[in-house]
Length: 175
Image: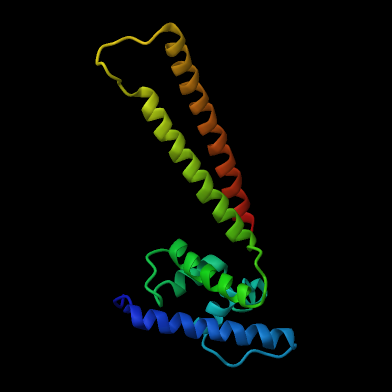
C-alpha cells in the first residue's frame, strides 16, 4: 500500500473533486453526459453528490466507493472519508442555497448529540457515586433516597439514549 498523500496533495485532490462535482451537477441538470473522467473521479463525484444512480452505473456501493477513495485523501477509515466528503457535499449545497442536511448528515448529527448526552449522564452517574466531605459523614435519609433515585433515573435515561442511538444506526443502514 502506498504511503498516504501529504496535506497539500489531499487539499488539491479534494478541491479538484469539489470542482468536478460542481460541473457534474450542472451537466446533470442540463441533461448532459459527464466527461470521460477516471473511475476514482467519478466515484468521488457520485459520493459528493450522493448520486446512487452513478454509483450503480459504476457497480459500487457508497461504502465500497468510500473504501477506495479514502486512500486518495489519507482518511484512516471509511467513516473518516464519509465525513470528509459529506463536508464537501455541505459546502456544495450551501453554495446552491440548500442548507438542509442530507439524511446521512441528519442521522450522524443526531447520533453525535446522543453520544454527548450519554457522556454527560455518565459524568452525572460518576458524581452520584463519588465520596463527599467530610470523609465518612453519612447522608440523611432524604439525601440517600435522592441519590438512589438520581442513579436510577440516570440508568433509565442512558437506556433510552441507547435505544434512540440504535434506531438512528438502523435508519442509517437504510439511507
